[in-house]
Length: 349
Image (cartoon, rainbow, N blue to C red; front, side, top):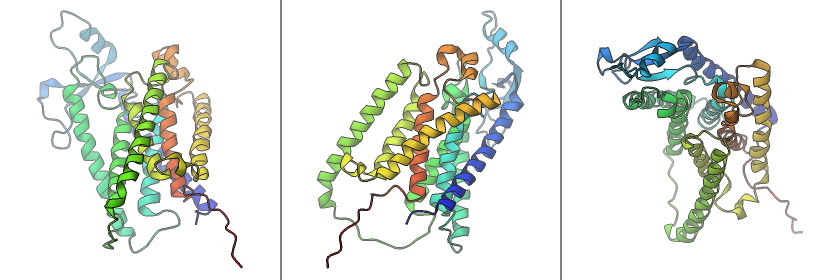
């Protein structure tokens, strides 16, 4: 049975509130930096100042000082830039960064906790423990990623955003989503010992061929799409982050709706939620930027135009679309509206 509309709205509200709070925490890091760079403090050795050396020592230096030294041919010691304002909170592309925690919280609440209408009080403590493990795994994984970013940031004008995945906030949330899906797939959030009979592998061959054919067809489609978006400056120039989310969309789409068009056409409700939800989300963040002047949509953005030039004002569109396609697809599954359409069958007298 589909989730009641009141519970579906409550689920969406809770996820939005949690994501907004999450983004404000990252915004605090931006405020700490202000108009300064965080640079690697090479005078204090290779070991970091936090979490057993996983992060390098950093210090704040005014941007004009860093740029003057790094552009001076006579300067022997160049600054290694680790991060700057915008790398953690990403207010210039707030809509993009907001989408990743939305997906993460949706998975955590709806698929692990069972919120809001499938909570088992007996299993809840174990599920909360699973969430704690996921958070710890995500933090540790991202500390390693950020350490690697610090080690490889040898270009004096490089940014962690370009080295380790566009935004550090995206890094954290992507790892959280990955671990949440992994734990969910392993069944650890239920701690169930129930066993089911293994499927007959002799029937897999034809189905496997069809899956691979359509998977590579969809991957080919999103590859061509991403190339076209990049060439028209509707996506991030390096394309790596955008393309990775499009690949995630392909994998989840085939898991949700089947592995060929003959299954997709039987699930119009879930696909409609995915498409319509995305189309409604884009103007919401567009209007948010116009109202606040600080929280960018990632497309048609005066903030990006001012920072990167008018020709780059739409570079967040590709990532914005792919992220919210995934979110609304997961939301349709959370409210149990992603299944095949039920047809009324005539009862035999």
